[in-house]
Length: 193
Image (cartoon, rainbow, N blue to C red; front, top):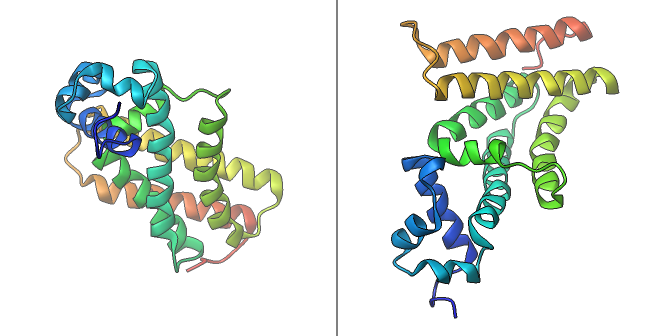
């Protein structure tokens, strides 16, 4: 029987914290049980072993990212909305490096929950880019480009790959501004501010 007050969300939050602070490789049922003050077998009331925990963490992490990006976009449109969701993405990765790694490393394209959660993140990007009135094919290219920029910047930063003595936040702003200028040049638009 599950410990009173222990539910799947509590388990996932504790697992995410362990992944963020100790790294994905250190996340095990034993370390999670210790953090929660329970015996490892009790976790089987909530997840099907370590693979089940990772599976649920992917969905949880993507949902957390979606929520961060959604909050950032509220009340904004055009360039301001793109900048807001981009910054929310990077800040999410900075706050949750282990959880972010889980969402990419253990994402299964044939898992319906993973597809739905990943699709919800992409849907935010689609909605924000609607302001640019792009044709369907161009919009898909732009979405892929933005996702690549965000993941690439976040991954290089996570791995300590930016060693030049310049402000990373400024580099990120320049990157996003350049991306937005590219959208406008493709579409012949003025700034969407």
